[in-house]
Length: 255
Image (cartoon, rainbow, N blue to C red; front, side, top):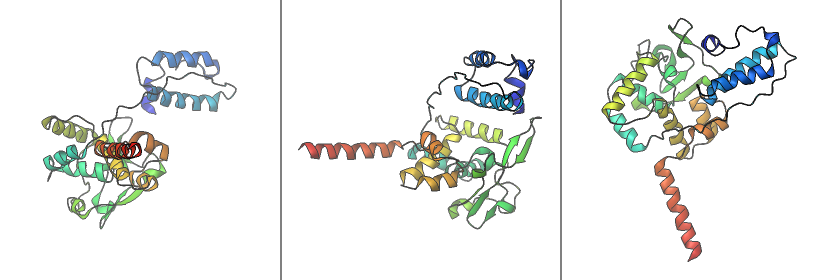
């Protein structure tokens, strides 16, 4: 919110709240459209409208926002995952990769896991995240939503990779983790984001027929809509299998 306040409202921040009109807000939205994504504009508009609702309740906003663009999400394949797991085996990055894919966890959550307090047997509790404050220092904070609090069971082979008495499971900041991951993918001639491993984890569970409610709990998602619209993309292997099944059924009907 501090960053948004400092960077998003340059053209209107000196105006008294009482002088802001619907037309001014629309012009502000239009000015941003070429510069940032529709999602970013939506986030900024939600912030602004909340402030205006509190301090200028008589203003009724009716603003046209840019339409959201369909996310171009890379679906990590099983083959890519096997290559990545093998290439990072026995390393701190490898542990982070496994936590990202098989919890599935965000990088901010991975960097905040404390084995001393957050691991009991084969269970890992996610109850905090490493984020930057207004001074750009890395700090540990609570999850953004209640759904972010969760305890998940992990395979013993992954649990044994985690140093039991350490203060951190992965001794990196989210930025360092991102950079290490990007470097490794470059070496492997692959191109996708660390966050796509979280997509992979959700998609993998979905492909096994795991109920959405369980996937939501395990990954800390707040709604089924978010899960279905963004994360539960079909794995290419499963898509091919489904296509073959449909074609076989159609052929049998036409024989």
